[in-house]
Every structure is written in C-alpha cells, then in structure tokens.
Image (cartoon, rainbow, N blue to C red; front, side, top):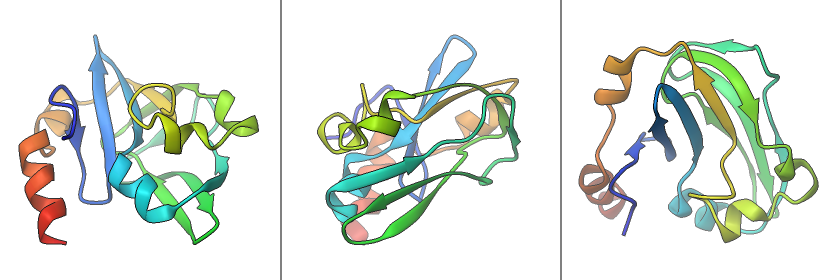
Length: 126
C-alpha cells in the first residue's frame, strides 16, 4: 500500500534516500485527508532544518497543514512545479508531488523513521 523504499513519520511525511540527498513529500493518506490541495509554500534553497522542524505549508479546501522535515538537513532543491500546480500532490504524492530535497543529513535519523509496514499499522490505528 505504501512504497517500501520510503520511510515515514507520524505527521505523514515520507522521505527517500537518493544517494545521500533525501527527497521529502507527504503521504497519499495525508493528501487524501486534506482533500484538494490548492497551495503549497515551499522552503528556500539553503534553509536548514532540525528533525521535525516546520519546513513547508500545504493548504487545501479543507485545511492548512505544516510539513515537517523528517530528518535534519539543508534544503538543496524545491519542487517549483507545485507553486503553479499544487494538485500534483493529490495526483502523484510519491513521484511528481515531492516537496523538497535535503542534504547534509544524519543517516541515523533516517534509519529511525517508520518503515512502510510500520506506517501502514500506524495509519490503520488512527
């Protein structure tokens, strides 16, 4: 149900290790709960975040929600496509709908996040 190669947070972010650069987005569960996403505010390239730091904002017809950095690091790229087409997150949360990429990260923080199976259990209990 959730991609196996990703790690997950209790605040419904996913993260993928692309060879030391970490790609971050929100899960399809989060996107579904938000409904039609209408706006995404992305961080600036060069910004640094601690693990669980507020990094972005997503707004929908239902609510606004913060997006947190699953691990600490420095933003090296943002998905500018979301600025003009935030609905990409609803359509493709794990591929085209990523939010930002982090570098200079602690791999131990990544390893401490939930696996796909653990996240599936977590969502089922909500």
